[in-house]
Length: 434
Image (cartoon, rainbow, N blue to C red; front, top):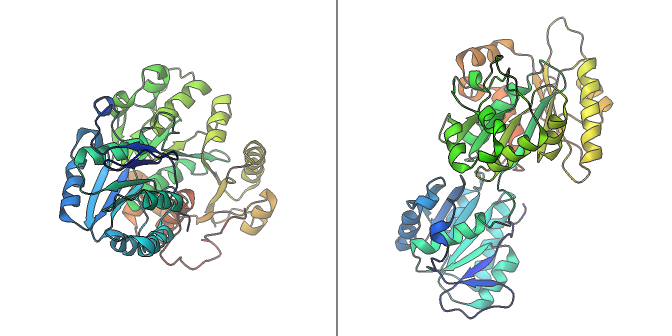
């Protein structure tokens, strides 16, 4: 497993001498805190050894600057965190308290890194004001070191420095979904993947429906918003985190919709710059942004697709889908040589009386194996659509829900720690070739 990432690293040690290698801040220094933006919608887990530490972190979580974050405090320190994440995906930020030092501490940190997902940040709370210890922890991949006893304002400052650096990139990752042709089910798959990420990985998700006249996100989640993404696209310069909160429709604690108006009495002029601007603002406050693209090819569609962190192409096993999927794959490979290749989802496989291209032949023709193969199941998908439900709500233990969870894990770069289901000719979890 990859070690936790090292981004903005600052030492928070009372009365410590300045270091040439790192910036030093004293815990409790409130300069600039009053004008700091709220911490984004991240998930924070704290594993403490002392009740006082847990109390300080809990009080920090009640501050207005952490109002959007999801904070949970546990006891058990580093060993407790290691045990907890053996079978559970790690959050955006882990805070761990320890009273040990030397080789024992670094053995524990190494074991923690083994269970950490890529992108997880780690803050260590120690009881030793030791510069050499701090330097070694930074070298090992720790993002921040705080010295106990903690004060809530120091905790807020430490978290803020990790996520509100004006020079840092947005925290959110964009996952763009597009159909190889109309009717492949791309929107349905996008919405179900967004649901799985929000419900199974403890991440806040915003689903952005970019099909302004015909978008189905509102229908799929049984919502009828009065405002949505069209209002943001018409005046992107006005969009900020306050207006964004008003325009989003909250479906669950962690899932929100940036819904399309789905009306035909308005003319929608889409341009690449407005789309890029709106999506950047959404990414600044949400860890995962699902972009549901319509099956149209325009400059703005191409730009949004190629700028995404991950791309999912939904196809059906027919000739038109094969040709279009190959064209999109070839374009993304050429334009994004240093990014992950696009994922292929082969949908509606096994439709009765329809001649189909076999899964193996489809993969050979497009030059990429399918990440997920979904069988034709009109009863399940039709019931979910009519009820305004997701597949995981309707049939959580079924193969289709399991497939959506698998795809979600692949897109978020997290390993599945649960045993994978057996493969079959109609429903396969196929590892992509890099």
